[in-house]
Length: 144
Image (cartoon, rainbow, N blue to C red; front, side, top):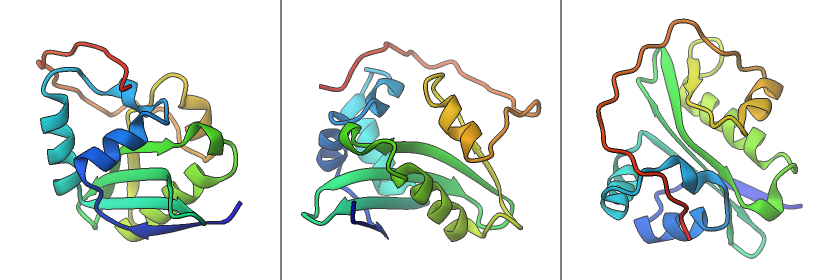
């Protein structure tokens, strides 16, 4: 499978359409969904998009970083028909490089329980040093 990865800003509607083809959409709350997706795609520090030969989006990776010490992967999704083909691994590797590389940057993410095996396979571990403050309203839903 041939594909390319590049830094690219998607529109909110492009990202929502991509989410419909992945299992990633279930990580978002229903509350103000479209508004928040638009903010996400416009303001995230690094936005990577994988596209196939037909220029279709097959993978997305978003991250926030200080480019000095840490990187937090906020979103990593691969189209269902392209999972298991190395796209997610390539996106994470490129994201880490753009943020400053593994010799400089600690990489974190909040992983859905179904994604934990993927992150463990690429060498990530569950940390003991993360704190959370969460007081937002959160209604689960599926992007369709």
